[in-house]
Image (cartoon, rainbow, N blue to C red):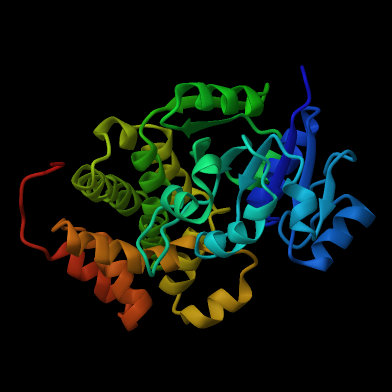
Length: 337
């Protein structure tokens, strides 16, 4: 295997796991962080204890706070900053991107102010030449489990079959299986919207309810994600795959999910501000909920679970009242259209 030079932009749990995964496969990887403490920790101990506790990274992994150093010689650049910061961070990286570098977007979210997906953010931020090579990576993949080589399956989406196949080959390993999909919008929406539903699933667990309730939230959450996706032009089949149902099940049921954790603690009666101050990393669903509500209004799509989640986050609606609102809605046929 020929080593590829990869710059990973973002040293949270997922960015660190991606960098470790690729470095462990023999690629020449530079991880960029804006935090001196993270860089120092990785250099001194081989670990990012702030965001990926207990995981020893490959000794070949390089780390820097200089974004030019991370990307200037890269064949592939992976953007993994929190969704609301991607535009700012990648604008800083843009002057140093080599011509022909392949850009991989691994952030899951929607920019709240503009309602742009990460694909659109990168196209608007980088040059046309840079975004001619753009691939989206998504799917059910907790960073801590990927870092420990737990068997994982994800999907990469691109308008270019050749670019998707190239990223597939780059990431594929004995523990990390990669599928391709041409539906960029659907893959991005699945990865972003599932975080909002996961907040709702966490609330039901925090209220003390069990598997019946979680199953209802997942199934009806998938229905409303699909409705919005279809209204925006995505493919129905994408939401039945890894970036849709797969990621939704993971984030709604897995204790490693930050979004589920926020919901659980809301259901337990904690205040949102206190929860967010206490969490390492960014629960993307908190910001995405606002964007989802605006998208549902623009496209005239009913999204009752997302609406109640937003009401809890933005207006302080009591979790039990939100659940009662959902259960008391007018009976109707099961509709996925």
